[in-house]
Length: 115
Image (cartoon, rainbow, N blue to C red; front, side, top):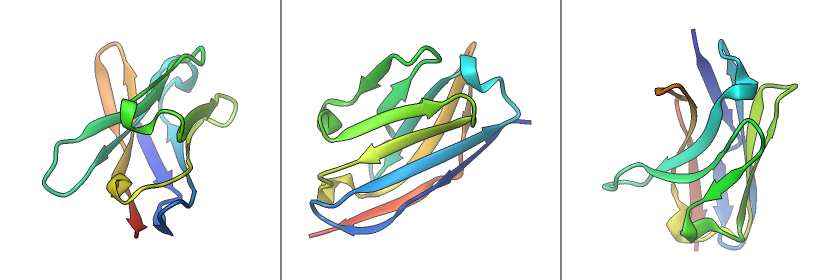
């Protein structure tokens, strides 16, 4: 059974930083496309960034230059380093694993950026 557990969310002032972590189990982590999505109140869930098993990354335009996704295949963990946070980054952030069309989600972690 796939399990994704996020941690690292919290309250931070605009301009600050947070690092999210997602620990995975029940999957062959190294070959999964891992990603971070977010959903703000009243909005659809959107892709923030993803990273392939080989380390190729993809970012939403709104976070390019501020966020960095990385993975440690030995620890079955994917990270999202978020710098220069803005109020509009406030959302629930979800970890995702995708392999052969099957997607799994974590329970989400709240990130709140205050002005």
